[in-house]
Image (tube, rainbow over all chains, first blue to last red; front, side):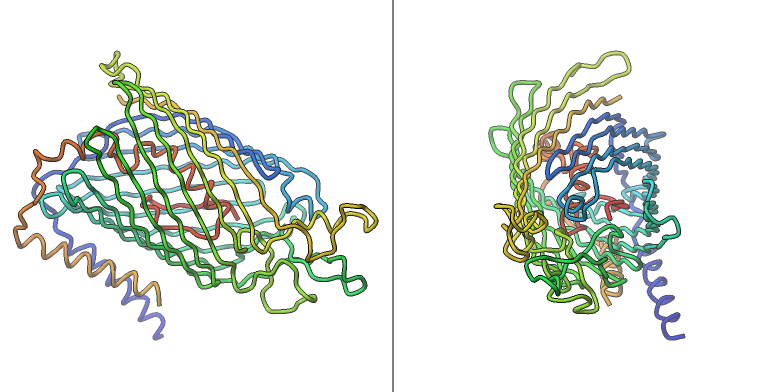
Length: 393
Length: 78
């Protein structure tokens, strides 16, 4: 009963929070109509993922806007996880559809969004609501949002397996103009998940009781809940010779014991009238989850056991180079302007406590064989290419 | 617990906004001084289709998530 009351109280608070927002007298603006078509390709760590993404947004009567996105991943994977599990390369496809609606009233914008993502063994649906409000002579914009997600987890090797995940996202943000050339962004988000949170194909490993040089695989066991907190501060600065410098920091922590830092620094440089060049470096570091270990001493050593490299201690660095070319800057028929864009990102991942278990799967008389727990630490690089065209109409 | 904190934060911001409707705060950067901020190179997210893709690339390979300033959505990357 108390729980029910607490939930109702929280909902009432949230509803009240929305009602006290002023519905300002002066009008804001919705972004311009545009269409984007993107081809993406990720290749690294034995995995190739590529596909298209199409995004169209259109406004009506200057106060409504609709947007639609189709996104596809075509995956071919022979990652280290697939190799260590003894499985062979697999292919799969993920299709994602999103539909969004915006309503502008005075200086307040309300947004609704629905996204559905489907794979042969995974389905995710998310509904989002957001509100943003311009304040203080439009120097400040605050945003608030809530999302609810429902996932279905299946296993292609076991037709009877089906589990669910419930997700709740709460986010707030403040955009602040500080000077005529500096703008800052603060965002905070709480995400709570409940359900079957591990990957049904992934295993943890423990020392083989009959030969300590080898390991045995066993299905992972994750906690059924996870709550994370993330806070990010970003800034963008206009340099006197018409270029932009941007950077940011994000702090992340969750109830699984993961703590992560993300740093980003980028530079945008227009060349003549039609070209824009961009360079960016992003650094990410995290500490492992409490229930993560590369090699457990024995089977069922603790309540929760995981060996996902995504939960290990590691760092990654991403370096981007990009170029955009603006065409028909003065418009052509219904097109106001367009741009061709090519972005390349190089990613390097280095793991501190995730070893390359392929070395201890070799025959023990192979010269490259390493006993379990002494294999080299895993690392890999990836190339990410995005080529896209954008038109404003 | 964190849910309660998030709701309180939303309420606090909303109250702040409510109060702001009653008073007049003089903007220290005037509308006619915002041409640099309005330059396309200063857009917070100039290529939404690209940033959504890169957010997904990182989220699928890292433990951290959220506070990206976007609408949020299903990652489908379990």
